Length: 387
Image 1 (cartoon, one colour):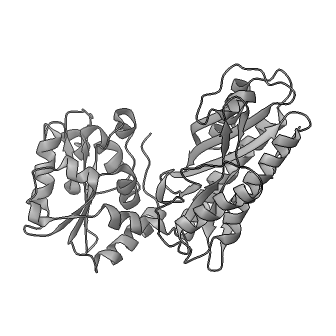
Image 2: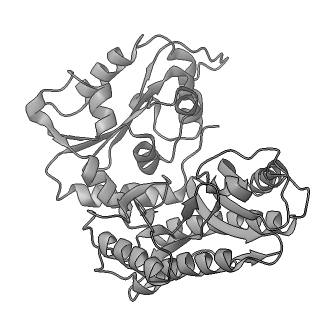
Image 3: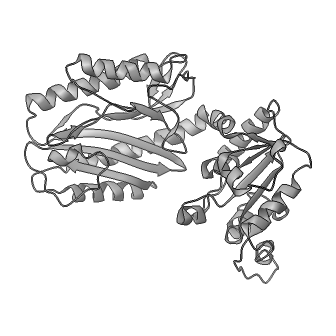
């Protein structure tokens, strides 16, 4: 389903226009779906079906916005007033009928191919102007713009999106609360004989009932809990099993990504001690996160804390990531990311552990960086849940 623009996206686009005043390019031209959505509030169903970018948005320093996309998107784009008909460059054939001669009904075949539409879009931009282009737009418009007019704007756009507005934080918070509520309900349903698939179906249904779109629903148990991104199966949960949840959801265009672990029956000493270690690692991140700390420093804090609490060896390629309209945004909480945290950045902190043949466990939470530290956006119990 295509999404329509909101006051939030008017605000976000305004922030970008202000930043363009000091940019080294005159036009910002983007095709990464999340970047197009940031500027316009519109997400195309065709991108979801094709699993590749289908639209290009171009914005100049005055706020003038043009959008290129499939003829099939002309109907919702114009109906929702994303741009005017004069500023929508349609390609391909899709037929809308209209007794009133609505503009969307006249766009089929105006530009037969994406290439034709791309040339028309480029021709609309000020001749000689410098274009800041993200990687997706560079691929879609390859060869249509003189190389000396192009500046790589992928990092520039990522920087604009990295610090969230209060309205964006509220959306992330709603997504996190919906997701943790679904996990909590599923945990209460754990009993001997209940299957991973039973719990996964309940989580997906709860997310959908709350307006969210389930993106990944990982529910694994027993030895299977060590399989990081495995799909739920018909395996029945037994006393003594670890049950690991890693759930991703999108609500109103913003992601949630949360992890919890439960055990059916009294945990063993090894289960308890290992969970205490990974919990301590995540807590070290929560205690240490503040503006000026780097992503790498947080990663080192997490890994060192887990190991100091007795879980050795403990190896992780990352211990979290920024989150927003993408589940993985920049920076990653990992070695080599010497990016300083800033107020308004939002992250998932996580310290999972997986041992094949034994099991896996995780705790993952969403935070916003504040002036003096960080604030959890979700509120559910982070401990090892004992059932």
